[in-house]
Amino acid sequence: MSNIEDIVDALEDKIGKILHKLDTLQQDNLKLSEALKSSQSTIQSQNKQLLNWQEEYETLKMANTILGSEDDKRETKLKINALIREIDHCIGQLSE
Image (cartoon, rainbow, N blue to C red; front, side, top):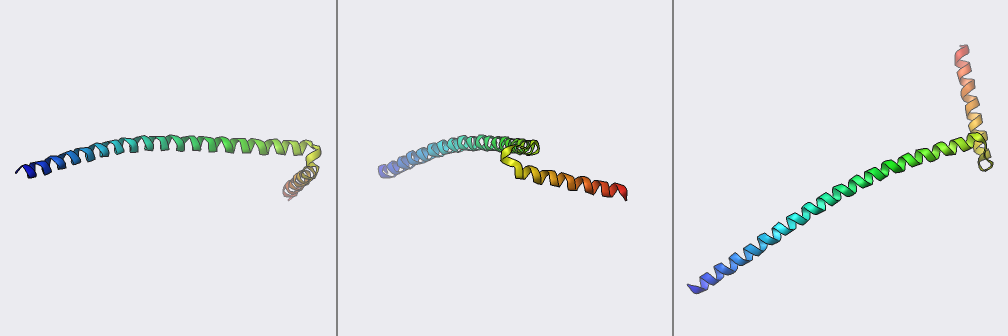
């Protein structure tokens, strides 16, 4: 009889340890899930900021092109030609 009681006690001890381990793992999982959500939010915010900076860069690049900076003379000429074609197209539509 004592042997069976020892086995039952050992099983109860093991089950208690497993339940404790399960609780610990669930808490860790919850913490990791919260950290993941926080990281995803940060990444999303940084992606929006990156897009804003890219748009601002393109705007500044276009302004420099239109102003005729020495580095972008070719781009300036292409932009002016594109604007002239656009104006000609508008004039053509108005005269119809």
